[in-house]
Image 1 (cartoon, rainbow, N blue to C red):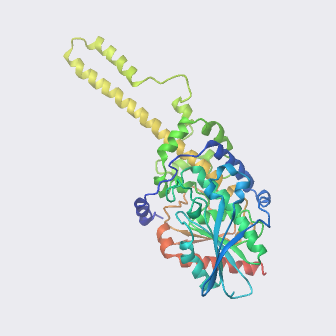
Image 2 (cartoon, rainbow, N blue to C red):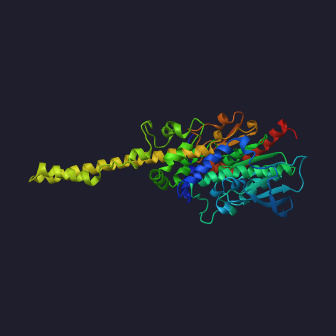
Image 3 (tube, one colour):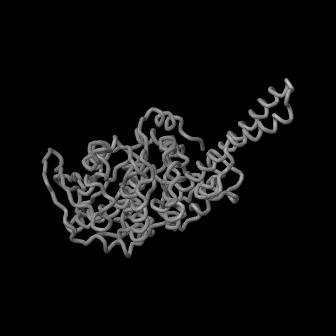
Length: 449
């Protein structure tokens, strides 16, 4: 199946650039990777957020058909890795829409996590929450992502996360914040409870559900098993500031010497098995078995310096003077030889640049798989309650070269839509909602309340 032309065109029209400041502080990445080992294990993670974790309601607005609650709470992540969270992100904000009258004896609630660029609540409220209330009587709770809307750092432009590490902070925060909200809804008597999201929101919902200790409906829309392909082979890879990432990777040895050793992704498409990935990537290479790390390839940390262009040319000129002295043709031959050496140097530099690009790409894949691959997290309690909705021609979330969700979560259902990422988002919201209704009904059939 090909890629959607609309996806490619839409990406070209957007100005958003990702990771303009690079990978993030090395010490932040180290803390995040260590904390990932904890939240990747449901038994450990469920003890991080108490069942009585405080959640506060600030305002209540009554409308003709519903009540809209606005609330806040402190992100639990700040209690465990406080240094990685910008101050604006610490307070989590949400909006909760409930019907004035419930249609059944149940009080179902679905938590919606935001996709890329989905600031504040109006988009989810208009496209999903209000229709779900009208069609199925399901309430919706919309959580604001860290780095978005009310939680956007002052120096961040639009949705442009400044560092790669910001995405991992967002994910870790949303896992714990979702747990806090699920506990709050549970003790307030709501149920059944479920989670959903579109694009990045679907992936974040997938990670959050892995740590909930009970069966729970999950409907991730337009997301897949890992975010690594999104930023390395999908159309969003064109928006990544690769120049800064490559510069930091090759000049700061901490990435090679310390951070890389923290990558412990357990799946078959990990950084340590990158040959298949590169073989399937747009710029394929024959093999990576000979490829050392950038510092070794380019002797960045070596006392031995490669021969400079000036010394090569000087040597060439001296030899040429001896060979072609008083020969009028010598000038032309010398010029040709010098040009040939320059061309050779340019080719060598191009090879080095290409090798650095591949290494940076593989490092990106490694850190993304470490923190976002669902195989690095516990399997949800009941995968049969998961209905994945994917677009066949999705150019934003490539499925080639990564493990399928059916392999990682045996028993989950995958529904494929015609078209790409953008067309599905614009025209298939009704199918997203239907998948949510089906997942909730499936829960009630298996686990009557």
